[in-house]
Length: 114
Ligand SMILES: [Zn+2]
View 1 (cartoon, rainbow, N blue to C red):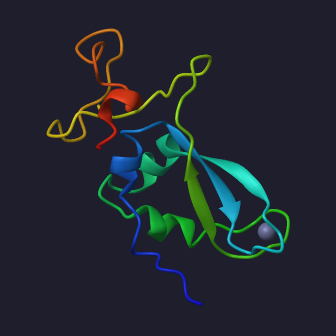
View 2: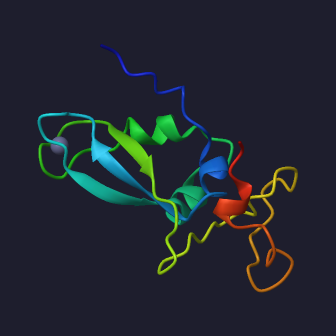
């Protein structure tokens, strides 16, 4: 079964939720997991780049297989999500500023649709 690498949100959209996500090896017999930080990705790719484009090129450090599937890590009380971009829709890729204009309602829990 093929994997739809084009079915993912963009790096910029992912960075509205948190500054990283957890990734799992696409090889289900392996299931090695790791952390994918968005900051280095955003230095390398434009924010509108599909996350799948990056994920399919990742090589597993354990089995050497290509491809990873992401699981969003939303924040907890102890470790709140720290989005890179403001989570409010319509602000484009405005940098999240938790101490300033993003103080109220910009965080992930306030931004999830539905
Ligand atoms: Zn693996």
